[in-house]
Image (cartoon, rainbow, N blue to C red; front, side, top):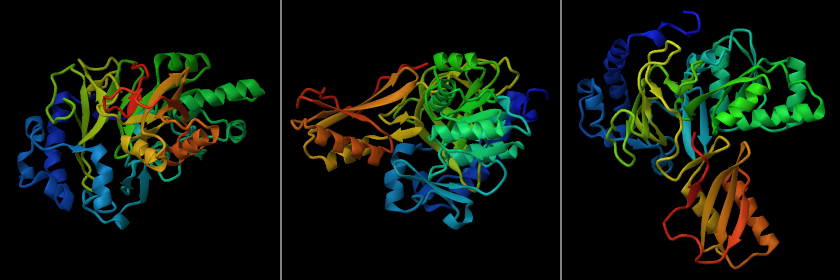
Length: 410
């Protein structure tokens, strides 16, 4: 099994499919014990959901609806069968969306993707995802420790301290958003610090264009990407083949026409809908809002699971910026706090290898102190810094768009 995490990765596809749908009815039965799922699905017989066609008849649950559903029935909207106290950790992601962490070994299914990125037992991992409130850091932390790695819980920011950690512990591996890895390497070069111990990375939470992957490789870092969400961890991951992302095990992925639950034909771009076979924290047809397309055939790396092209944009106006989701309702909150703004549009772009945000605000108040106060509100509500550009009232297009993500795809 050299190069593979276990035998599951090289199963005959038909055997994998049979196993997934043999296990699905028990997961559905567990989900139906939660009142939210019971209302959502109505009268269904979990024992009858044993194929993709049958699964496709169930309604999708939209991730974008979770904040309102959870607010109406705290903390999980009635969509988790167990009590909050039965979980290991409890998180709050932007939205807000409340997420539980099941108790167990590698519950976020990260180890497989770390293995594909070349992580090995005994590696020291610099984990720069945030450990504050959100699950990202804990997902990668638990996956690395499940592999037998030692983890430095560094979190994001504080570049000087990060360089101290790197020189002291000599980590071989990095986990975090790709932009911050470049920042660390740039800072090390500028300050004459030694970050050469980092030779491999698994990045997630932000765009990872080929140009940045190539630049990191020129710095001696072999970096791979994983597609993950806070609700379930890694859904798909990159392998040494560098041809799309391979679907994780124990996950059923559908690609549907945006706004519906109807699967698209193979190869057509659509929205990712994920079902996770976990009876403690079941996810059934969760529509992520992310777009992708299926790649034909098996990966040259030998893994036989379905492949996707990776993240290809958003099916809705929610955008992921520097690993954080930015939602239309958050922009509405900014405007609510500043009635001087009549309409606004958040433009998300790239400057070099970093994400940028500019709030184009229709307002007659262009005083610097007012614009600074709006910028402070953006950081408070979105947990990200963004510039503010005043524009003439009535000048923004009347198309209902609140978030305009103009970053290049691919």
